[in-house]
Length: 172
Image 1 (cartoon, rainbow, N blue to C red):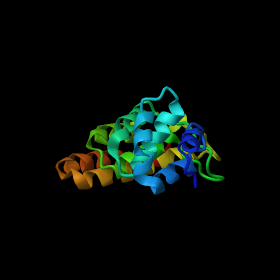
Image 2 (image 1 turned 90 degrees about the vertical axis):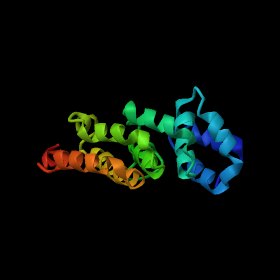
Image 3 (image 1 turned 180 degrees about the vertical axis):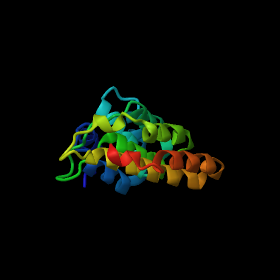
């Protein structure tokens, strides 16, 4: 576990931020001021990974950065894992779900409804595994957010019925 703030920032500035993100969660309040300051950084990785670190600490300070990652469809694949590296868009969507971020409901529904989204991911044997991972994260995050905002539930249920009842997404 990284405990040195400079080391944490260095790791957050790479495409392998996983240990640093979880170190931040374990260190808690000690690193929050630095992470919040990093949200203004010109270093894209540092800014975005600091927002993810704040989210796993249940701090919504980086929600605007996370929403930006979803809006711009940031499909940068992080390199922390040997298998199933997630794209930043999927991680941002999951983080927004954990934060129960009401402002992201329409943004997440846009990702689910986007007919071209599946074309933006690599395919293995004709299957866009990373797309389905992103789609699954989007549906799960939507349900998490709706727990906190039941007034939007009926609208979201109708939307999901429309999107998934034909099973057209399976052909993507």
